[in-house]
Every structure is written in structure tokens, then in C-alpha cells.
Amino acid sequence: VPGMKKEDLNIELENNKLSISNEKEQVENEEGGKYVRREFIYGKFQRTFNLPKNVEEKKIVGDYKDGILSISIPISKESKLAKKIAIN
Image (cartoon, rainbow, N blue to C red; front, side, top):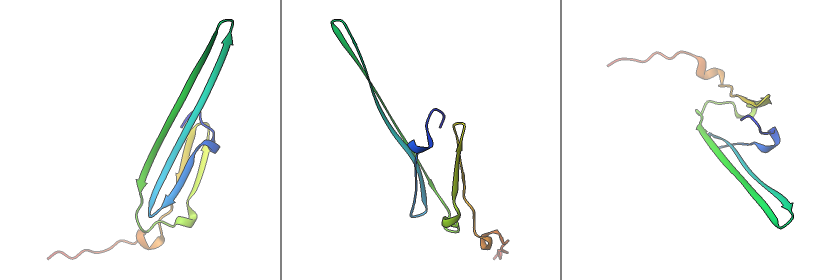
């Protein structure tokens, strides 16, 4: 998400869904002589990810540096165990 500040990003986790969103609105005015020029810039994005149920929600952390957003999502140790599946 280059060009954004970390304060501009909204990251939420609800019902095993991780949402990353941003809404930006900017108005620029330029006055000169007999005219007034106004430019409106509006941008919005949202991305939602479905997470597995074995995610450790309290240990999720995020980092933002040089336009790169990194989110670490740890999975509980129980899910790392291999399971044997019987074939009928």
C-alpha cells in the first residue's frame, strides 16, 4: 500500500475474517484572478480474507514499513500435527 500512512489503514478481525481497508478523500483549491479550480480526489479499497478457525487471534501482529504492510497470523500448535486419514 505505497503512498499511505499506517494511520490511514483500517485492519479488523471479525468472525474469522481479516479485513484491510482504506478510504481517502482530498480536496484541492486553487484560486487565481477570475477563476477557482477545485479538484476532488477520492479513493477506497477493501480486501477481506477468510482465516481458518485454528488461528491464534490474540497473537496476530502487523507491521508497516516503506509502503509494505506485513501481517503475521500464527496458527495454533494443535493444527501443525499430522493426521492420519483412513481409506475405506
